[in-house]
Length: 148
Image (tube, one colour):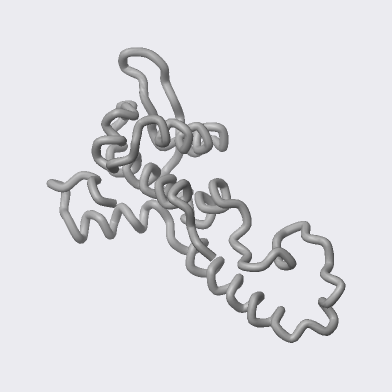
């Protein structure tokens, strides 16, 4: 399984907004500059996050985006499933998938199930707050968000 730039950038955007969560809306241009993501691509990613209610937006001169809730609320798994879809490495384990004709005799399904469980265990137990804490441990407050 490979995480696309959309998924990686969505996590970075949520982290950036959490790091700059001072009650003011953050402009796309600022996030773009810190994260080195094109504004156009960033707007597409933020639209997905906004539609899901993960970020709030405000139009106008003082407008921009901010994280909608506390960073503890958002797991990496939530963000990746929103942008990437299923985290299952094979189609037969995706939620709502039709039962495979070979499910009763498939020798490999247990491997894929174990891998799916391991992926979910990792991404569902790391929050944006955990990444904020790690960022502060690594960089302190003077380094606010580039290369995350």
